[in-house]
Length: 127
Image (cartoon, rainbow, N blue to C red; front, side, top):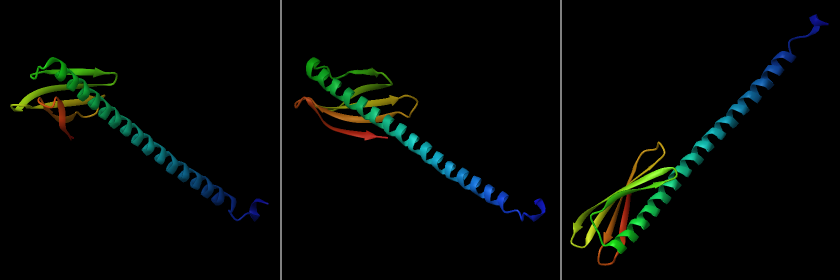
């Protein structure tokens, strides 16, 4: 009976195993890329939240204390935001925020605070 087989089962089995392995590899690659994308989106959202929260805190601090040569930092659960102020005109100050979340790169943002209006009139993110 062994002499009558023409080698059909082994190549067929090998092809099926190879196809299953190939599909598994594709699915694994998709999973890994989606996970990386999700982690990156989470980091970006944290950076934006920390920045906005720091901006609002600094704006409230400037309204209450009326001190315009401030610098400092805010600490969060997974990041840190430092800020410094410099005058641009008699009633306009530039606030520089540097946001660092985890081991990712630092993001710099510039906000412009108007003393007469007592609010931030513009802010620019620089990556």
